[in-house]
Length: 393
Image (cartoon, rainbow, N blue to C red; front, side):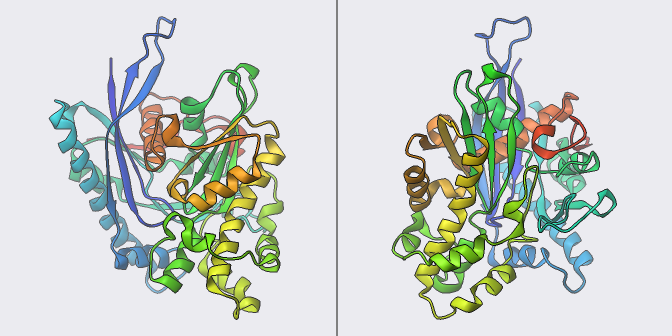
């Protein structure tokens, strides 16, 4: 029978909440007593963070005054924002005759404000299991009360406890959704942080790889906000009109994280505006538009290196996240991968801003059914684990 789940995601771009209502529909074409389930997004909704809340979430990525109190209040506010998206999804669903009671659970990632995986915050520093942690705000108990639905949250912690990075977690979903029998597929999420999933041909039986590449849109967005007063560079037009500063690109790429082999994950803990400001000091007199062009290339190059290092014979690259709408980034990716078909995830059945939310609907379903959600080949965990904590309605 068809099962309904809601997935919610607020990522490192800090732009807001994306949500989907997903139906897992039996695939009658599967020759099996237990048909595989195919995913169909029935409704999508989003809610933008206002400027003040975005600034507060950004501030909580670094040590600051009274941060425990402020983080708790931010978690409450985030739960309310999540609940608003859920109610919007349910209103749309009711038009099709789907009632709230039919939704099995909500999968809510929460807002990451600190991420220190084994090995340090991805800067190369030594960090054992007792020193590793990950923190996502969201108050799932409050979300369950506000929606009356079961909530699955805290997906990263179990993988981290098993010695893994706790991220990225989307590769298992990418395998479920995008894997092809005889084609090597790369999936690139260009969010605030970029992450890459490398899917070997399903018929090969090879292991899926995945890791965070580096800064995605986060630093480009911050620079655009600083100089244009805009939250992002629309279609990458500002960057496209600039000129690369080669010596700045070299300095940006001279970061120990890029030399680390997977498994690895990172976040704003490392690629912060303070990190960028330090890198830009010798280039203070350069044209800001040229800096934006260079930041765009800084986003692209680690992704290209990841593909060339770990999947030399890629057949296609599927791009999701907000960066899929950045024409300049997409052009640079295609120009650098002439033998690879580069396309938005929309061309493969799921719009770019729905992929991560759908991933957490899928992860919630895995948890509710007692199935594992992580891929040890991606995170480095000691084994496959059932992820998340369940907050019953």
